[in-house]
Image 1 (cartoon, one colour):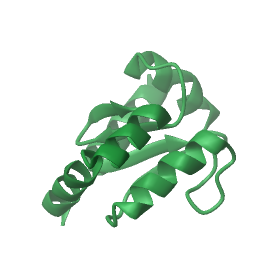
Image 2: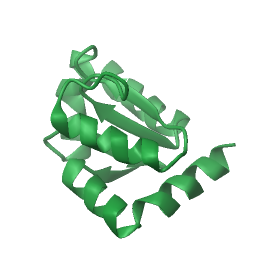
Image 3: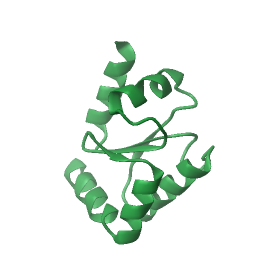
Length: 107
């Protein structure tokens, strides 16, 4: 149960959080790289968790989220989706206002 509590705390402590392989500056997979690039282009700060360094979260989060793959973007405790959804929302302009709104309330 400890891992689930850790995930819930991360989600409540961070209005925008990306669970990814690697870090935004040094991603360890192409999907994580694309997702973090899109987020960085939104111009708002976001938290991230490197699931390669957190195998417990890597194992538990897909069950909790009911989403099998990484990266996973969460905003205000809600799962937005993975790389394809993040990129599609970014390209259509849907992602930017969601990220800006979530980080505005966090300031």
